[in-house]
Image (cartoon, rainbow, N blue to C red; front, side, top):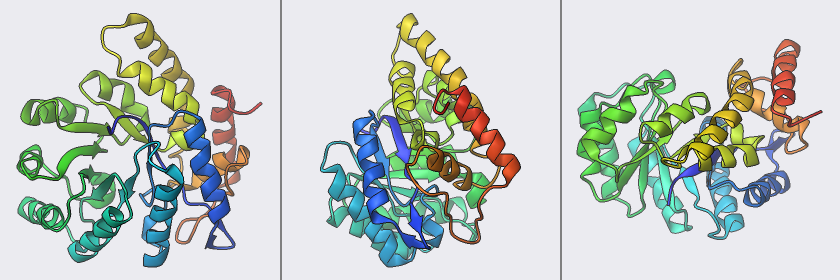
Length: 295
C-alpha cells in the first residue's frame, strides 16, 4: 500500500497564512500526475512552524481531497510523546491511512527512550505507523535492533530512512524481512535504495517533478526488467541536479522557489526559514531546465 513516489507536500502560504486554495490545487496536481501517496505536515511541509490548529487543518484537507484515491501518510511526530499521541489519534480519527512519526529531536533520547516513545504511540492508536529516522535533523539515530523491537508491535509497519547510509537498507531487510516497508528519505540515493530492497521514496523533488518521480519509482522497483531499470537510470540522471539543488539551502525554501516557477505555489516560507538567495535561484533554475521542467 505504501510504495512508489510519495510526495512530502510543501505547505503553501500567503501573507503568512495557510493558502488553502493553493494547497488543494497542489493535491489535485499530484492526483493527476501519478503520485502514489501524500505526506502532509512533514518536514517539507514546515510542520515545526505550523500551530496545532494549522497542523490538523493541513492533514484534514489532504485526507478530504485525496478521497481515498491514494494513501495519506500524515506527519504526526513530535519530541513530546503526548503531543505525538494526540496528533496521531487525530490523523486516525479523520481517516488518514498511516502516520509518519519522526524520532524525537532535541531531547536526545536513548534507544530505550526511542522504543518507549513509539510504543506509547502504538499502544494509544490503531493506525499504521512509519518511523521517520533522520539523524541529521533529529540528532538521534534509531538502531536496527530498536527498529526490530518496534516492528513486533501491532502498528509499526516500516521506516522512512534518511540516514544517508545505504547499508541500513540491507541490515533492516535482513533483520525484519521483506514485510517491513522501507521508504527512502533521500531522492538522490533512491535508485540504489530500491535496488537494495526499498519500495519507494518520500520525496521532496516530487513536489515539482511529480510525473517524472512517479515514472522513476515505477521503473526502479521493477525486478529483473532490464528495459525498466535502464529507464530508471535515465530519469535518475535527468533529476540528479534537481535533487541536489533543492538542498543547496535549508529545505523547503529551494523547492518552494522551484514550485513558484511552475505556478504551483508561492516561494513564501515562515521564519526562521527565509527565501533563497539569487545565486541559489540560478542553481535551481538550471536544474529545472536540465530536467526539462521549464524552458
